[in-house]
Length: 215
Image (cartoon, rainbow, N blue to C red; front, side, top):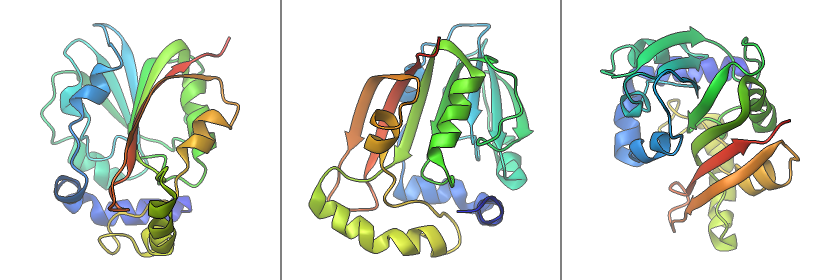
């Protein structure tokens, strides 16, 4: 989706977003954030923080910078009760306005399947994180089962253009993480690649832990 479409969709769906995620795509965020092995005093980027579903999992003593294109999603995120120190900023994860090596770690939940160019988005996350930084990703993705892929092909147009529920959440139903993390030649080391396979084409996902291997 183009940036303006993304902003419009998520501004419109912000108030309902948490309820939709709980009903259809509820996944506990604590294991995702725990995989970053954060220490007090570290600064972490939450890339496309949305309504802040990751925020309660961050430990006390950590500084989180949550960025998102949708100001209404950020308004919802500000309502969350959190232990960490949080700063919010309107920013495009495909063009982050932070210097190189600004963050000790990064996390992203249900984000790269939404952006127009996930390779550029991940490149930006690598640029602004330090060498050796962990990047934790939870996302929808293309199934590794060819039979399920057929159903994902059928829902692709509706998922990306109309959304499910209609006008609320739009994403790439064929988001190919094999291509992104193994064939894009990005400076990453894959530490964990857990796939969530399901006969339901709406429920296929992945949880990844990447290490920034830039020099």
